[in-house]
Amino acid sequence: MASFFVERLIATGPGRTDSIIEFVPGLNIIHASSESGKTMAANSIAYAFGCSKVPFLPETTDGYDSVEIQLRSQNGFLTKISRHINDDYVHVASENPSIKEDTYSLEYPKDDDNTGKKKKDPLVLNTLLLKLIGLDCVPLIGANGRSDKKRLTWKNFFRVLYLDKEKIGLDEYVIEPRETYERTLL
Image (cartoon, rainbow, N blue to C red; front, side, top):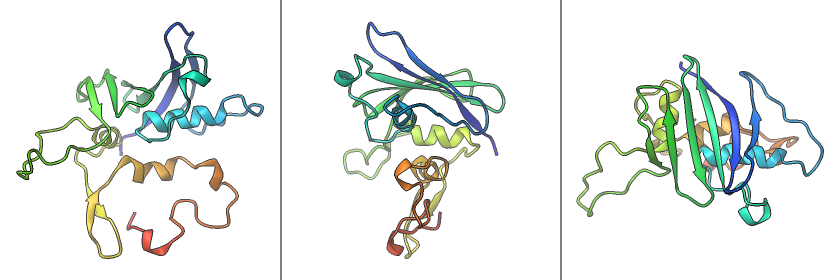
């Protein structure tokens, strides 16, 4: 399976000096005093990966208004994903020749004109992120106990990689939902 790691997180804004955190392959632990930006850093990475929770508001962070994550693949290629606060798309730039540099949507498009025809090869962040881990097509997975199918999403996969701080120390499983009717095959 292909792999990548987050090499760098950058918060930017007009007239601001970039705020940068660099990471290394493997486990990275951010340790600092309270109110120093640890949660904001983790939430910024999740936001760049397409999560909807805004990591910071420009008016409360002295003008930072976008985040960028730089991903390094196991074969050495650098891929940059940039997202402005409140945008529902990201900009992707990559050294990898198999990744198209363009604007990617966070969601798959709906049917065109209610005809049932899908848009041709949409650029969707989910497809790109799955490609970076070696999945060239988006597999269908069980969506519920009735075995209805849905696309595997990065959000499904991300909950295995990213542990929300509110879940640390709970007696229940941190990956599976609390209610049994919410559990999927993943």
